[in-house]
Image 1 (cartoon, helix red, strand yellow):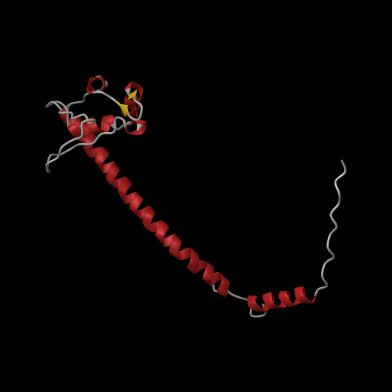
Image 2: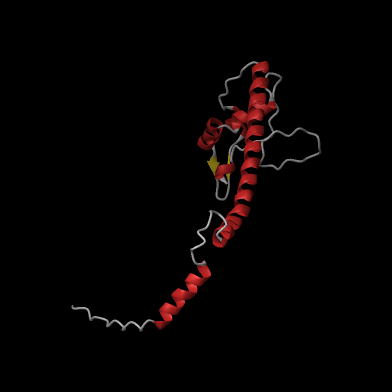
Length: 162
């Protein structure tokens, strides 16, 4: 699909693998750290470039190796690339921790909402006035009043004038 064209990852070679024919295998020179290239390709600018140079087939979009190799990348020194990769990975780890906290908070809220509502219906959220009648008694009184009330006359439908 077009939105996946140019999506990249780094294969560390720790396990045997065979890549599909529609994938492009890139080997970096000694002047380019694979993780740095991966972050460049997955950046908004890298994705935008891939989107611009992709070709669309009948059921598949593609980018060829020649067009991928033409992607302009500012190449910092190796120590700078290492520092950029370190900072990006630190930020991703921080984002993962925030996401985990958010998930935990959502679960807590989902548990608390029913418990809070139950307390509210039992009158346990705020101090209660002992002179107030219980809600069940009020509802019963309203039902009795409604049952004792004379039925309302049916409304006549008016004919539309044409």
